[in-house]
Length: 293
Image (cartoon, rainbow, N blue to C red; front, side, top):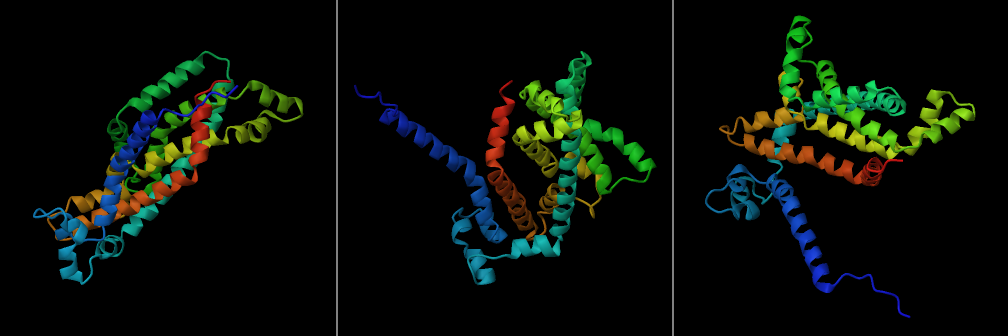
């Protein structure tokens, strides 16, 4: 007796393949177009006469002698010192991720294993706090920061971003911890571990994909933030997104907009690399968080 075929019908397979191809083109086109344009001059990339100039680069050829130029990257990274914004962003994002995950894993584990009723209300309060607009939260920090003369530096921004991100981290990690049976840490304690040793040696290795997934979302919050960093940091200590915005705010100056284009590409590339590197942990973490043990 022949085995039943599990192959999709040809029309359905063609339709699904075509949909995926169209989706990839639509999703990737803006970045690929921006990356290509970052090697052109403003007259080509923002040409009103012919959009094809952004591809062929006639103005770029006349001005530089080549269809491609690194002027945008040189202007952004060297002339405008975009590297300082990159360094500040690295400090802020790493600090926010480390602090948020440390507090989130401990708090999420405690709430997941707690049998008290206040756990639900704590999570509800965290959810309300997370739903508030960032500008509303930041405005409450401005006066004490000014009075203490600590406005405009990276540590204060890290504190605010951690405060904004912590409710989300608690919710995510609480959900992941609920998916792990209590028998796991109880068995570890029967074998002689303390509660913290059971948490560190038995539970964390199992839910590591969940920690990676939550850490990625925390990273994206700090990495892409504009409201908090633009309100709490000076121009000397600014991060990448406000710095890019400052380029766009000066489009009347010839070439400045190409600094923004080059800076945007520079900011996006690390995100692609990060997601590709952690893709397995992200998928495992999202799957684990959706299943309750």
